Image 1 (cartoon, rainbow, N blue to C red):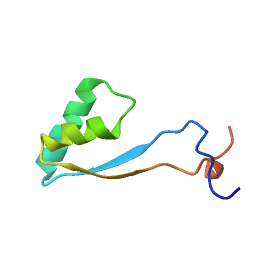
Image 2 (image 1 turned 135 degrees about the vertical axis):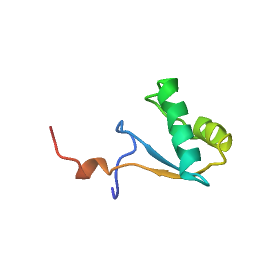
Image 3 (image 1 turned 120 degrees about the horizontal axis):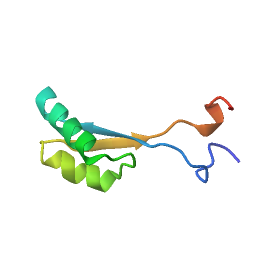
Image 4 (image 1 turned 90 degrees about the horizontal axis):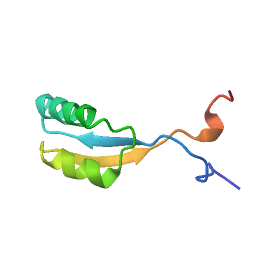
Length: 69
């Protein structure tokens, strides 16, 4: 089997773009205040839109490339 098994739990990184640094910081403040540790792309899109932002993809590390603990 080629690639990384998506059956393994992992953190997902979402990319969101904003028209200004001020809008990006306001969005970050909103996320921190919400206390989220689990981010969902749909929710991020709704929250980002309020600050003029939009989702710009997602990604994660290949679990096979991470050091074994």
